[in-house]
Image 1 (tube, rainbow, N blue to C red):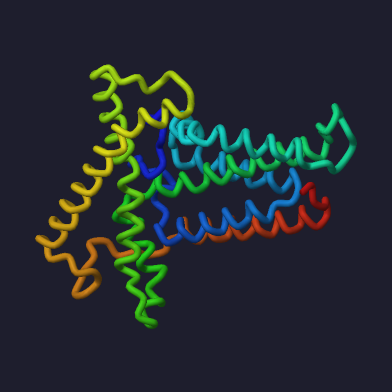
Image 2 (cartoon, rainbow, N blue to C red; image 1 turned 120 degrees about the vertical axis):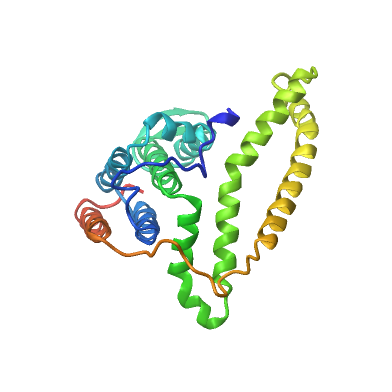
Length: 271
């Protein structure tokens, strides 16, 4: 299960999505996430879901990799849908037993919320799948550069966010190594109740925290040795420029927004 976590990983490629400017990818991703929450019926949600699927196809990232990223949130999707089924009493009653009541409105809302969460994961994960940490840092810095006028350390914030994102796969790999080492010493991590499993994780978290602090210290020391000081007198190897791909992405996401607004207006809301 630990190896199935793909959040924060980068998969090199030369697809249409890979070649987009990182600033454009950040803007389009943010706009798409906003549009997901603007969806009020199944037609508008289906439109954004199809958009996420075709974005994955254009990125040439394997669907197996993307679906692996969903494994860790299967419980969240199921739990959210279950709450909607049992606590949403709108619509016609489909099943009723004592205080338990299931309505078609609850079922529709459960499906709607599940698809919404999956679309969120698809679109947000695609940003890190197709953008290297260095490029993502540069894109965040350039987008937030106007904040420098009010003395906000944009370069430091961008570097912190990118390092935190980049270290997710590293920490996952570290957890897997520690768990395998504990199992080789006879530790039982897969059986027993919740309390027993929680206690069995203590020998894992202690070396994980120690190794994490050690890695953080080594990284800080390496950056200091290389005289890293943020943006002062800093140059960049690649100059960012918007191309026709980025303009096309902006136009398309704008058309998506207009279509979602129209679908919400003419077909009403499910939730």
